[in-house]
Image (cartoon, rainbow, N blue to C red; front, side, top):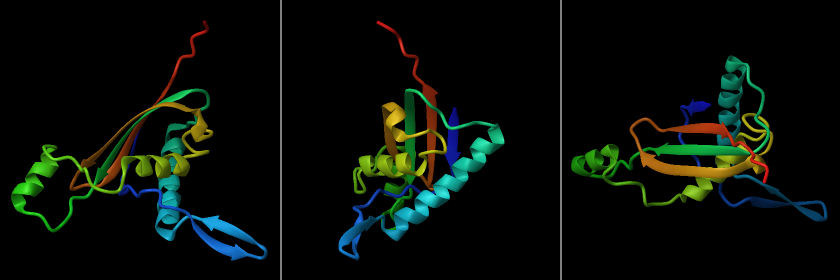
Length: 143
């Protein structure tokens, strides 16, 4: 099943900490929290529109993260990036995009991200930032 979310990808940042009585409470930075909330709302709507329940069992997930092109580059370089000649080899790391997406879709697209047994992921430039995922059930073969 293919899903497309018109939201710019946001990387999972290191958790922040605050004192809470005698202990410490960890929390996501505001930017990450807002991203996960908005992504969750978009995903819930698509699942509802299609009459789907969260997937269970082993899953293969293909992810494409389309990030905006930096503003301070030449027109020639902009064209190269949008055509895919130059790929984003800059921060944030692809793995941090993946983590934020997995956490943001827990309980919505899949029961839990521990159900994901295979990932294929790419980050690309686009003048239309978005996230595209494809979720497929993996057939379990008994041996």
